[in-house]
Image 1 (cartoon, rainbow, N blue to C red):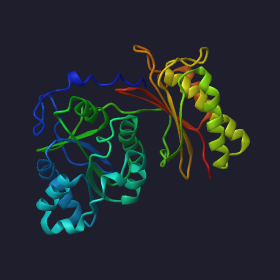
Image 2: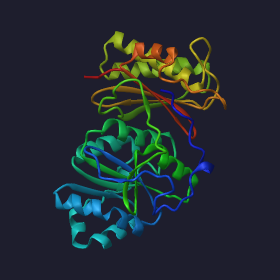
Image 3: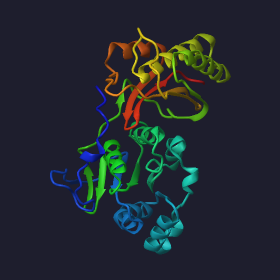
Image 4: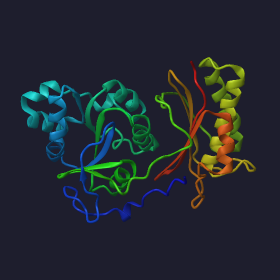
Length: 318
């Protein structure tokens, strides 16, 4: 499956956000498992009103409710919920960022969370965080309601691109603008981990530094030498793809970044590249991408409005 090009913010449907736009999907009951929905709403009081039914239903069933917003948002929800607000958690947005979101939600269990965790991060981590929620928590009994400003064209496009559901005044609807992230194989829980090394890779000469950095992290993570060598090869080739190059050419110059993440299950090399304008994204069924997966357990390719992201899961640390 080829990942589509990023949404053009200028093409976003300007329909009112509180009601459904023409041609939208019908209102549906919440499915079993994860509900990952965008709430196109810039006003905290309106956001509280629109999500109230989900919050009160969850509280009545004994589930957990978290509101991850700034002071205005917290005040709006406390005013609306009254005494029930004492049963709601209000973690600081500074403690729930995209890089820890998956682990935070996994620990939450059954419940509802409302916030702007990924919306407030305009970089690749925000896009990656949204896709990771959908990929990794599909079976979790969670409702994740992500607030995005409909008057910001970039936020509006991003909300439509990354959320399977929309929540408007009438209820939940399937999002016809949703673009599922492309995955080469099932992505295991805990894909994202804490970043332990970040390295700029501006040109082909910097690839040697990339290989040394990944090898060092793999050794520290306890990988056996053969496995560590495979991780290095996967990261090298992933960065080539991220830059728009192929296996027969050198890294194309650009603002490319390697980020190595480690969690209890895996070492992840995240290669972010800015290929030349018009360079086609490598689809996961491409023979070059198939070759890349010879060196890692899982490989996923994403694109966002800033360029592209090739993300490679490269083995287990335990």
